[in-house]
Image 1: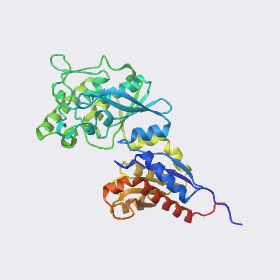
Image 2: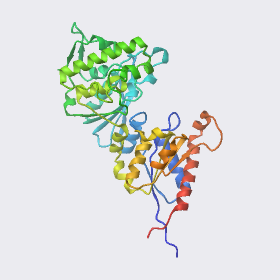
Image 3: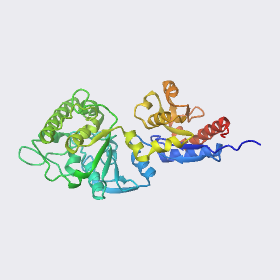
Image 4: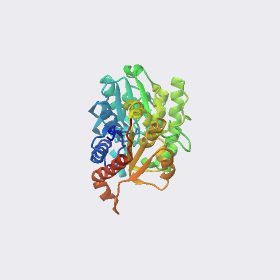
Length: 388
């Protein structure tokens, strides 16, 4: 009499497929396909993110939290509604800078980091503090600003004053006028709150690899603006160092998101950590992965860079430590992914099953995802060996 096969425990944990599928939608499609090929599989869905777009949804879904809304100041100074989240235990607020101060909120013709402000990001943090959050996870990808975070800090009670004792202008232009930093009205709850900044770049605050030089042009800065902004960030760093004693301008990562990472470290004592690491901690993936027989992950493109801080690459690294095989599914698998496959992934699959343009592939992504997941499951079933 043949031994009864034990159901496979499969973790389905994809990243978002940009402009096509959210991480949650991708997870549902994969799970549906897997169950067609392995009807008795035990599926655990944990959508993931790496600190950028999709972090809010992934963490809130994975922790059973709530998504909330607040009226904040957009990057152009207009009033907008932005979302933030509180994890299921009520302790951690998840904030994506792009929701309040993102480049996507600014029409291309109006992109000018001398004027765009991070004020709304600080207003979201303030709203989270009022909700009782004791920890802030700040995802800083996709920002429209190079204001050194002075807008966000203003919303939290920091005063940046000019030589006349008046508040400086919003935007990068305000950096050039700062003469005094006043902390007497700093939000009282910040003394008891841990701030974690999801940072996956190593750019320092200033210099040829700094916030202004590298990220300024992406946000509309001309060469002359880049020089002014870099000078303003140098001034800001010097004044923060005078105020708190922290020297941070050369620390890798402090130039992220137009310098907000640096100012939050310098003034608020924030910690900069890789985004995937922060998200994985909240989702408790280090506890889930060792209990699995297989992991299925994915994102829009898997290439050699996937191993450097991206969610699927970091998940594959975690799984490898526990001897759990990993399948990666992507919209496209680059030629240079072979080395990555040998190191961390058991197998890599592309969604497309015939020649098609990008628009068609994105439109058909759910169906294509289910199809490839079913085929992956059939291979798993074929390779199953009875366990005694």
